[in-house]
Length: 174
Ligand code: FES
Image (cartoon, rainbow, N blue to C red; front, side, top):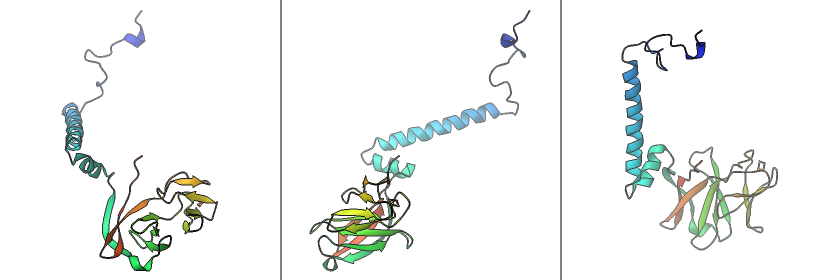
């Protein structure tokens, strides 16, 4: 008696016996080779001195740069104060905080829990979400209290000609 599990139905039966179209196997191989070449390319680029940044750009992980947007003149924001603005679009609310003479930080301020607006409480030196008592570290944007689990997206700022400009939104790697 023949064991059905080991029975060979066709003489060339194997795991690809259901491939019928001409060239299907070679297309499969070609697709695989393309993927391999792409991965090798990203690896090669990543090994160059500037490669990590370029590879991140290729993979869509680099910080995203937008047209620079003036937020405030330095003379108009005292140390310890904050100013609200929108970046990169008018729908993305954000807050800029002046921590020191030359130190500014900015974050998109939709709470990472349920998107209530997070604001700066100068006296407590904390960013606070009033909805469920969420709190965020002003130096990193990381959640420190309440339900939020993800940091606020950081906006990279630059000082040019006596004013603070928003230039990039930092991306978080998974
Ligand atoms: S929405 Fe901010 S803590 Fe819930």
